[in-house]
Length: 100
Image 1 (cartoon, rainbow, N blue to C red):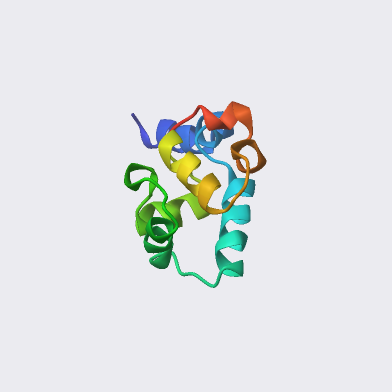
Image 2 (image 1 turned 60 degrees about the horizontal axis):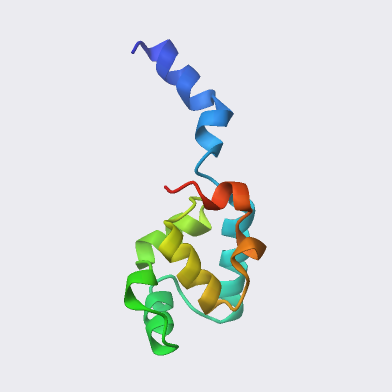
């Protein structure tokens, strides 16, 4: 790839947006802040309320999700359960199937 091709790939929104959901990230950030938790505290809080361990994302993943990256489906279910929201209330069905 030449520099021009690389820049074109980065600017191609259809390719970049496939694994992103900024609205979901903003919502999850707000829900976390309402609970007074840092990204590092979320995984521990999820364990305390009984979310299955394999459905608990790391604090790094929490930060990435809040930045708009669509997480693995198991983490989507864990976060939806933790924040007591239906999965489709956070991620739209079209984006829910795309895994980052």
